[in-house]
Image (cartoon, rainbow, N blue to C red; front, side, top):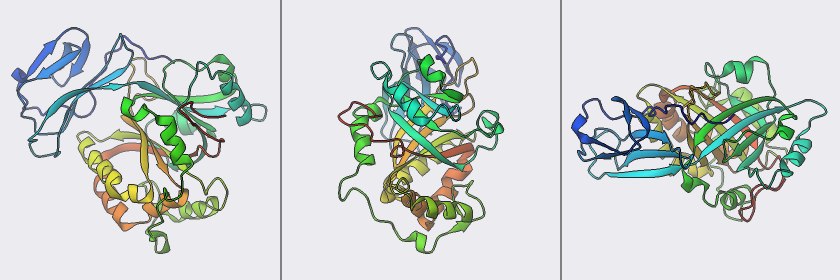
Length: 362
């Protein structure tokens, strides 16, 4: 499904504080953008009264000419207190399609899908092709009919830097499809394939050792809060003994934030990158903001998408079982989310992936 380019695109959860002076906004050129003040005709905003109380994304828009997503936002240090140093910037955000695919049973296998995908390599260049392994967290309210109601077994996670519908020859192999579109910062896509190849095929010394938290794990009654439950622990112990389970895993995260709680999740993300995730090899290699289409796309109610890499399922479990991770998780992540889901996938499970910037080798 293609993005409806005529749709109004609302600013995301973070908006300027209500006491922001209207005189601080100057609008130039033409286009359609919605902000916290209602709708205005503009493609670009310039602020000359720099007195915000929050870090915030101001406006997201679709550019009719470049067919890319742009973000105008403030950058600075500090999230709640007044910022002492601000810079207005414009970041190119190419729109990517995140497809979950369930193949037709028996006659439509993963090898058949990969062979057909390879036949379109001149026009379809995936960022990620990954085998879906297992739900880690189930959605509780959003997209549940599409994702869960039919007891669908999802086979493939396919991420492509395009909104063009999949070719009919691939569609013929697909029984169920769930798609969400997201604007991904271009800096994450530059040289993505070579960086991803290094993550999936690490060199000696790339993988950090486990921290030891699994020797005395913190066990919860449920994994829905991204905690290590007894059932999840048992599955991880079994899966980690397989050849696939000893390699890297990629966790697909869909996120919907509580009103006004995006800032808390940003604090969680900062801690993940600084210590609690990175010390276990965690790497948020794709992060994007969901593009909401007026036509009612599958991702209508979700806010962000992230694909997180871990060197192995045991590194992921080591994080969940630890006190340092759960202190941050319970303080920032859990209260900030209205709904979420996490799917464990394995790019190693599909085959040997991208090298030399050419994308996945199928």
